[in-house]
Length: 156
Image 1 (spheres, rainbow, N blue to C red):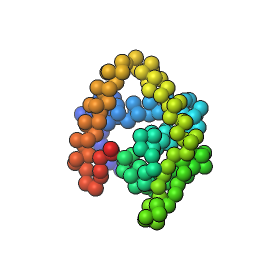
Image 2 (cartoon, rainbow, N blue to C red; image 1 turned 60 degrees about the horizontal axis):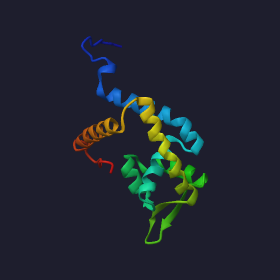
Image 3 (cartoon, rainbow, N blue to C red; image 1 turned 120 degrees about the horizontal axis):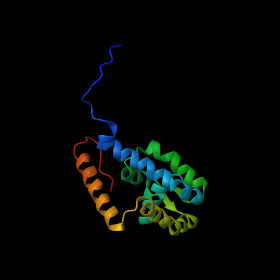
């Protein structure tokens, strides 16, 4: 094999994609002990967050908002149902659609999820305002990038 070394290749730490990726991993590790206490994985937390804002959504809607394939989302939903946090029911108007709704224990989890934001603020040493500005900047970048991707919808 011919392995050429690119001497002018940017260092990984100087690449925005890696900074965002590794920051996401760091946030997930920070959240893990809290999510473990809630009985959730990070992926399950994302699903619950969507349902806390708007209950009774289709699998398709949730997968679009998370930018995931429904085949990736289905095992997450099954585990949430086994845990008693959601119910999956067929849409009576369209048997092909599955409606995902919160159970009472699933609704109650929301009260305990606020400590995730507090832990991020504490660990980062950033004010709420600075984190909000950073969030808006990253979302703007994400939205611009999605406009250049075929067959992908921007998550809501």
